[in-house]
Length: 92
Image 1 (spheres, helix red, strand yellow):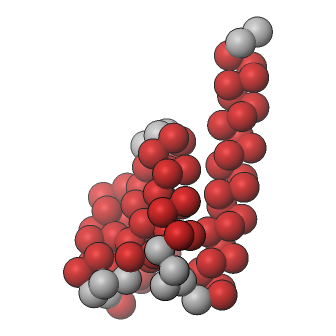
Image 2: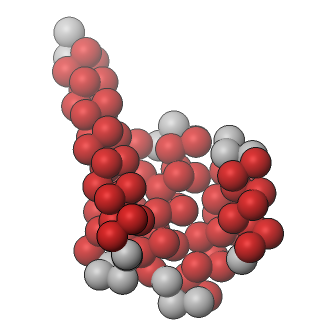
């Protein structure tokens, strides 16, 4: 787990590392962190809707500490705003 955290910090743009981190969290029963990591991977692939869903699942998992919960809340607001703007622009 420590190695994956270190590598995702060093290589934030590597979606595969985020997937592996999510699987590691899932194996440890850390559902919120698993969903948070999955969301990062989806975002790196440009997949906003699945990322939003993962962030919502992370929030509702009920096992995030205050720090990670705050990160998820902020990321969710940010991604939803970008998605809404993209949808608005695509209708023009």
